[in-house]
Image (tube, rainbow, N blue to C red; front, side):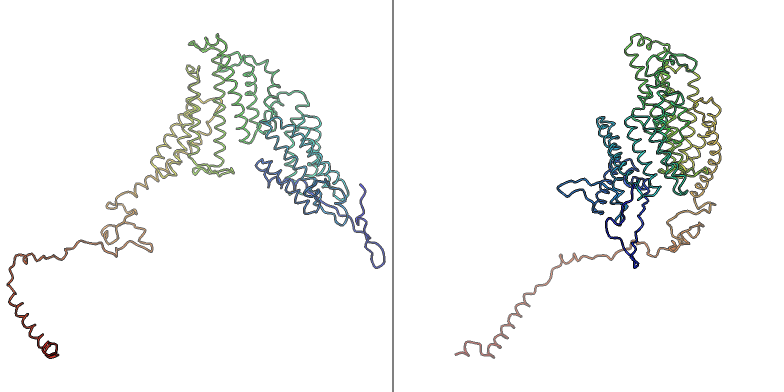
Length: 603
């Protein structure tokens, strides 16, 4: 594109000599992938919250237009204003203008991904999803048109090209246009690979991770373009199930295996062949045969657990299909009531065994996952997981669940008379009992119950030795784990026994020959004749003498009551009272006469 005048019509600046000085045009560098990845990780996509990310994009666009003074109309009227090259060239050129179409494309894409999650329950939202992806592609093309100008460097142009190709590939993938989707995604992958090679080492990790994100979608596009799936491609399709890439994967796998299921008419299990009639059971058995290969290729435990759980759901449907067939056919119903195990019963037993064995396999994966966050005090192993720390009682509870599963395997209808099968399952139960006793012993060690721990160590050792002598199952080989447990128990048992002896010594009475320290509340002056190692005596508050003595009862002062007064006769005092009355009258008269109070004086 032609570079616009950097002065935008203004008079060029002149020097003293009169010559015009033209400023060089600004060249911007926009790291598109870094920008959108940081925004996505900080605003919801770390947890798959596309609605939160969409709200952030809306607020970001509003802030950009307000800061750049580039609104779309006023409060009452809307007037569309797209970003053009005028805002990116000249003296007032601002890099933030290019963020508007980029964030607008991200907002439309986030809305589409939100609708994709909701379309699982509301299929009509897929139409809205497609429209939003088209809108995202529209803004992406606007971004590419602006970035192809001379205002941006080569790195920005390459990143913009890869972003546009990825957005169009996403749209065509949802439209099921497999060929064009594969072409766009491959173009984006190639551009990001070349960018990673050209950048320094510290910046390559983000681009290589983006390249790896394209691999599942590209494989699925290639699968659909080929029009069928071979045995190797079926393995790849089954691996996509655990990654959540496809919504209609179950239907696709069923359609792919329909032709192969015609050849699976009978099964051979434990020396007996049984005819498979229901079509759903045939498809399930094909999936079960390919599961081990998919598990071998999956390295993460979460992916393995997801694959097994999906197979368990399919197994449940297959068992229900066999039971429905038995209910609908009177002949099969009469066969199930006999003493001998019929073919339908044997098929049902086989499916039940698959369900229990796969459940056991899933639980063992959970045990392995828990051990990543378990710090075993008896082994030199460190915590390598990032989750919550696992305690020994948690592992004991998992093995308890596994033992319940093994018990259900022993009770499968039709397998009660199979001696070899029962012996294998019984040996498997003994194996898991050994592990359960070991982790219960670790729990008791944490509680400082040494004697009980020694007893459980001994029982775990006996179980492990018995399991090693017995015949193990071909599917679950636990010999190496059992040998490791036996070697660990030998050292742990003596350690727990030593702690138990020390604890007994500390509990002995100090009156004997023991000189171990004991906790006592008696002060030192009360036990001077007894020798004990009392550590509190070396502290700042030793218990030597009780300064405040205890209160003791003492006799109180006697109380005397004068009761004889009630029985005494006192002499009469009337004579005394009369004489005192006369003396009082003469004195009164004397005073009256002296002061002139009398009646004769007034006369």
